[in-house]
Length: 264
Image 1 (cartoon, rainbow, N blue to C red):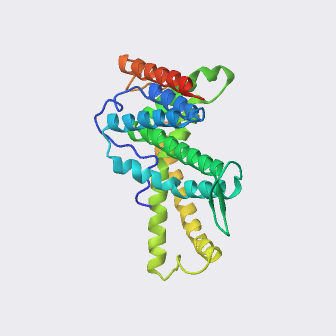
Image 2 (cartoon, rainbow, N blue to C red):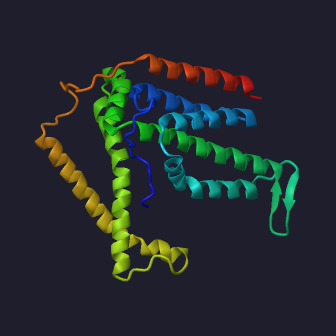
Image 3 (tube, rainbow, N blue to C red):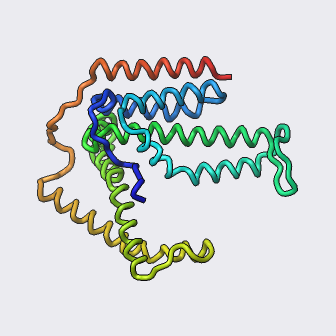
């Protein structure tokens, strides 16, 4: 649990860190959509190269990105097995008395696995290179046109930022509770799957109590500092689009054009 990296900001001086949060949000959101338009080896290779280039430009250790991948390993394994077992079309790749693996099953398993990896890479790039405050300001600015339809842009952006920020905190709290209960004789590893899941139920109660306490402390701190929503608020840092941000969006346009050209 100590290796969970979702929601953590890595303060490093890099080209991606200096970009406007709005351009990064637009780029990552569009890339996440573009992933589902890839349909062959060439297009997925292009997206992987873009992701690796982003990792290099962020100047963040590759180990941190590999740690963030731990969250989706079981999901990748489950979907891979699901496609290998239930997809029965194409030529036979491997045949055993228990299982027959088809070519289309292997293809679908590979596509889903690569998609999960790409989604995690681009989402991690946004989280690692954007502070919670900048992310809140960027989301609020992007959603501000919806205010004419009474959409609470500021409150929604604040809620998303706080939720992302509390993910590593809650994981650390869960780890602390599990270690405390293990020290008191709790067993989380023996027995069948049902007994293991049932053993984690006592962890939920102190975790929920701790979560409500943290939420109450945060609300009290915000009220003590005069927080009353986004109406009339000023910002210490005014967001501005620069040449580097335009270059990022131009790069996305080039990647999208190349991807649709390489599609089959």
